[in-house]
Image 1 (spheres, rainbow, N blue to C red):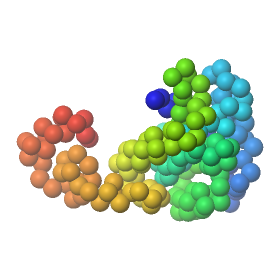
Image 2: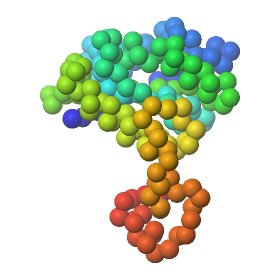
Image 3: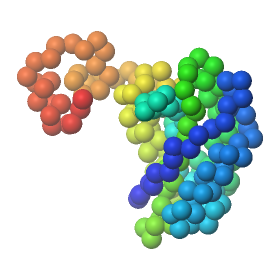
Image 4: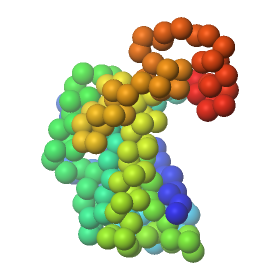
Length: 181
C-alpha cells in the first residue's frame, strides 16, 4: 500500500478564481507522468488523494485535502465545481500561487492502481490522515467531512493543544516519543 507523490503543480488563476479549464496544469501532470516512466495520461486517470494549497515564496500551506476513486481519476475529480468553490474561497482571501499535489495509489508492482472498489476504504483513511497533518499547518483548512474529531479532540502536547497549556516534563517526554513539534 504505497501512495506516490507528484507536484506541486501550479494552477492557473483568472481574477483570483480557479477556472475549470486548466490546460497548463494538465500538461504539467502529463509531463510528470512521462518523466517517471508512465504514459502521459496515466497519472491524470489514477486514483488516490490530492492536496490543494497556496505557495508564497518558499512557503506552502495546505488548504484542502481530497480523494478520488472516480472512473476518470484525478482528471474528473480535482476541478469539479464544488472543489473549485473551496479553492476560490481561499484564493480570493489569500495571496499566493495555487498549487496541487497528486498522491496516486500504487500497486505492489509500482503501477497506478485501478482498483476503485477494494481500495476505497484505504484511500478514505489516507485522506483523513493527510487532513490531520494539514491541520497542523493550517487550522483554516476547508475540509468539513469527517473532520470533527481531528479538529476538536485534544491530546495535550501531541495534537490540537489550544491553548498551549502547561509544558511540564510529561509533555516534553511525550513529544519526544511521538516526534511532535
